[in-house]
Length: 618
Image 1: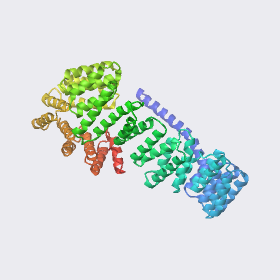
Image 2: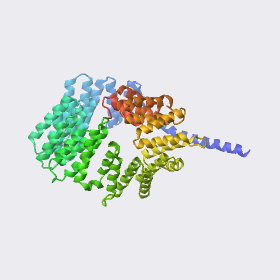
Image 3: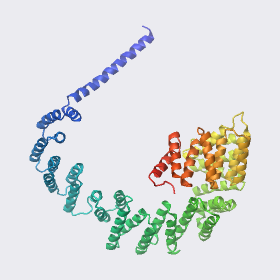
Image 4: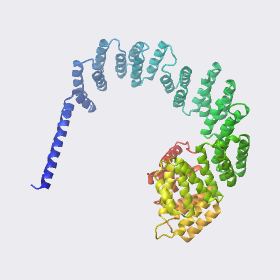
């Protein structure tokens, strides 16, 4: 026998042995399953061969009438088969055997219900409730049994009796309030829940969650809850629990004026010096209710400079004003000027805030919104001179300053600053951000080889944003700098990119148009169209932006920017044009045609929000 044949024979022998072992392992299980009476009985029930199942269960029950599982399944099949006399007899035996067990009375009531004897069923249910003695385990068992039967009325009676015995309104308030709400007794549901809350530590958030669960967005129910809370506050004006709930409820009704009035009254009454107002303003800002956040901060500021939250309120108010400006896609120069004055006055009053993150916002406002990059450079230069400036803030300030140097044409100074941050934060995400900006600066200048070397490392960044941006720029360079490439298009495109970054939009667009004319079929065409779309969007020329994006979708759908174009079409339709049907169409298109896109999850969320009539973006 050759070595090959011997090897094959050995393999077959090992395979046979393995199969034999598997068979030996599963045969006992198979034979057990076939020989196990209760398994066979369950099979008969599934096949609706009830008589055969009953015969097996009767034998098993007679052998061990205390086996709860056998008893329960036996009773179930008797009721299913309409053998109600047999079921009544079975439960009667259990009641004699288990004279102090309430569940047998629930079972007998179940049999009577099946027989249409509702009065007799309720007599049995009442007997079961008499067993409640305050023991939580027994209470829960009886409540669960009634709940399984769909008898919410008796589930409530169970909890009510247990609570009366315990003389404690806090017990079972959650399930009881839900049951009251389910039966349409909203006022009773609210009262039950509210009576329990103040006596238990940390109940506020649980109470909010339960209220939301059964109130939903129903205006009538929300109004009833508000009425009940006002009554509670009048009864217990010193109790902050009800007042906090009422404030929260105002916001749920989108009555932010009412919430603010309530907060101001509480803050004054409890002499909190603006503490509660500060939380309200932050919550309003988080919910993009900028107007009410500003009112909240103004209320704190109005209390005077001597109080502890004065400077903090002014600082946080600036952040909200800037966020409001950024969210206003139709802002005017006068809007920018208003925010500028607020920042200028604040830093004159509190120069110590040059060491805070607020200075970065102020500089960004000047550079990006007021078109005054030199003022931004001056502000950040002054910030870096502050001895108390934290190292991490200094790093971010330097990155911003590098960007504004580019805006003023000081490219070399920008590169030096990026390199400093790279060196100071070598193992930090801040260092990776600095390396990416330096790589992009090299790309702007046409030093593609050096830029690509940096980008190839950054593609593995722990920051998804940096990794994605590095990947896109790397692909853009590699596709256009092959040895036989004409370098003119990529150099011009990179320079147009720089002009766009510097807010020289007309010059950038002229250069992009010349590229399209000179190289109409160049691989950069989809990138050029995307750049033009972004410029159009920046200047609120949404129809033009859509024209360029749709051309990418129609002619370059398989290229790297295909999914970007589809997402931007949907976004513009939803955000600016309020064409929700068109937005839904393109979100669906993105999800189906680009399942691997980084935009898919955002598209799913927005599509779901549009379909339910609750847009995901303001």
